[in-house]
Length: 76
Image 1: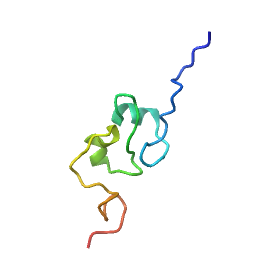
Image 2: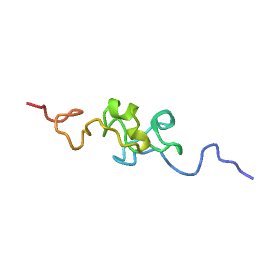
Image 3: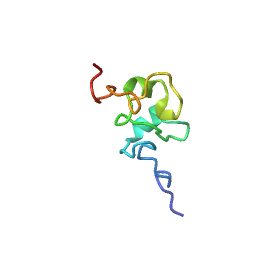
Image 4: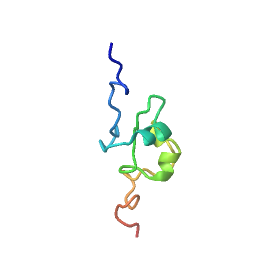
């Protein structure tokens, strides 16, 4: 019998953006199944640290819908 060192499910990409996610990010910020719903490429650290990577709706502005957030155009 062969035992794989990792699960056969590949959770190495962001569910929202498709960017590569390292294992540690998924374990720290992801949901209970180590899946990342958002990542540093598609969300802000503030939102990620409040649970957006775990699929939690957070009250902070989403950079995808709020221009000027996370490297977008500046708010003027």
